[in-house]
Image (cartoon, rainbow, N blue to C red):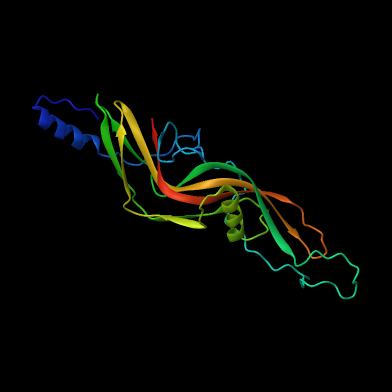
Length: 224
């Protein structure tokens, strides 16, 4: 969209502002090529759309089943048998990754076809909930996993967060550029190890588990 007017300074400014903040309809995302570093401010204007997680076996938190044949007491028929206490479900975080944005609702875009910086305003159009996603192999509960990650990295996480209808953000759009905005939830990637220690001191196979846990609600912005 372009602006070509020959009026007084005040009239020109009003016409420019009214045209610049109009949001174009939502469109499909391009192929993601970059993610937001965990050390960067997530609301910064990026140069590419948000990256999708690479893992193919991500899913919701698994339902934990009772462990068969476990009393949590030392054996009485074999007093000399090795005993490690009640069965424990273990999760140990090992690597904190980047923040990944899970969008809720459509992507909105605004093209500034003028020669000046314009102010683009975007408003979320739906309400949606985003929860934890994990790969196969988690042997403990989501609450335990979150507590371990929070303690190790001094972060505040949630099992789920809600991105709500009506939230707005305003950002400058450079001349001849398009600002794209997607509302949703930033999730922290983490890798850890999960397994079970049985009362007889044996352990299950250790699994490397990747998780994406809600960190904060917000906008992911990028220019094109």
